Image (cartoon, rainbow, N blue to C red; front, side):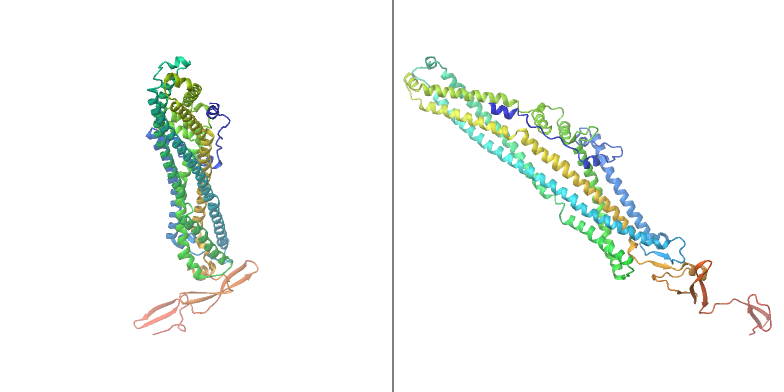
Length: 581
């Protein structure tokens, strides 16, 4: 009995307290736009509390998705506006004035945009690496820890099934012993029914009590085994389902590999295109490949990424709420488990509640669920002592009993011996059962499953996946908006186009050399524009010659019915300059 009591009332082990991680704290503090953040509201009997919590999660999803959709629409609007209205944001090449005509340093803009593009690319690719290294690695850690917990659960189930098998044998043996004892007790001492008074022991009473105990024991084992086997079947089914679910969580499946590859490889091609432009290398086929193949694929990948980001956000918030305890009292996952049970089962302080409380609340003796076994183990010890006494008495007085009763007592003694062995076997199984379900075993399994796998690795994984996918989405949209960075810059001669051609802009050129002589064609004439240096005004441009005749306005007048006079506008009338026809 001392062994049983030490197993039942062992207080040397105290379950560890859950330490709230940074990821749990940050995700649990996400804004809910005025809605509830208590995870246990999902299991509340009040529908309005469930709806309020769900509305907070939906608000997170919609809020973030609207931002990304609005940004995407803005990019499309700039594209439709074209180069004339949106400039380089429309996706066309930069058009900047010649440095000599650039009074506002517009020519520096392409370089700055390309630097921003390359920085966004570097941040995006770093985030992709962290997505795999921190996000998916934590998912793998969670799955590994969960797998170990399931293996421990499987071992506990196998041990429990072995105990159930042993109990079944004890029960069958008890029934067999009971039946043999009944047949022997009906003719225990035919020659002297009061043999107990003669030997100073109520042998008949002991035998009858043993028969009653064996009957009760057989019924107890039968009923207990039925419930035990039913519960073990449920536990095994749950364990197998959890194991299959754990194995089916393939965050590193082909879909995720394709997404990560797209987010890492495609930006590399885009960055190479920008690098070629910075090196003044104009590879038009490569630019066309970027425009019509790589950039569309990259845009699709970014859209998929920000959809994943929006979906992960409410899931992450839910996990953090469950692990923090939710509401104003952040009691951790232990408080969540107990509160969920109370929401589902009401104010039930029965045996199941005690089991849940004992194993999840750090083995708090307040919830100790095995007090009912104390009386059972006491009765079992009394029965073992009684059968030992009866066995010793009959064995010591076997000759006297046979003389007084006129029968052989070997079978009776064997039955009592079997009865004693059977009760001892039952007591041994009771000790094994208590050792199997002692708080240290179950609580460690609970801590590994809930504290480690569920509320540390899983939430950290969700936090990293959300954070990195958010950065990837933002940087990806920046790169899409600044896609003109991988086009060669086009230069525009502003002074020549406006001053010489009277308000008509010249056609821009992709040449970055800006030779000293440029030609501008318009209206059938070519004007030679040269760079000159004035000692007062510095570099400027002026038209120095015309390579084609410029039309001169003339005036036509009629002097007679059949004579017309032509002359230059502003020229004095002179017969020497008049033409007649």
